[in-house]
Length: 130
Image 1 (cartoon, rainbow, N blue to C red):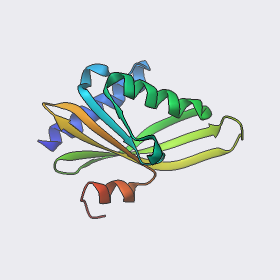
Image 2 (image 1 turned 180 degrees about the vertical axis):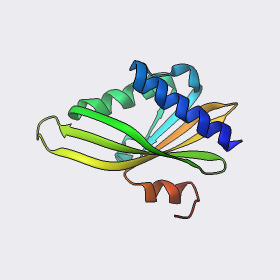
Image 3 (image 1 turned 180 degrees about the horizontal axis):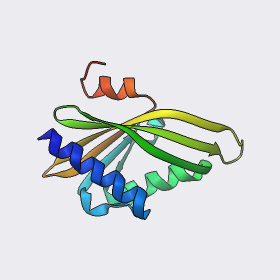
């Protein structure tokens, strides 16, 4: 089933990057986002939580963008490795780094997203050896 989920994630990113619109219909209404870059924030839940996570993330940066570099079938999850570019809001510090997200599914919808600062962290969290 995870090859179908890999295809789902490719459509998710293609749609978002092409239209700039977040593909809400691909998320389970009980979606949870766990940002391990800022673990003290706790879980973001539901559409309002995802919107808050995106706003929290965007508020830290004067500008940011990302591109998916790799989609990894992790059995019951999909890991998406992204190249993230950002410039700090107050500091002007520029980042160019590889981050990764682990997506889990229920009924072909994204039910959980875990955001990590590295591919290695995401692979470990998903139980996949490098």
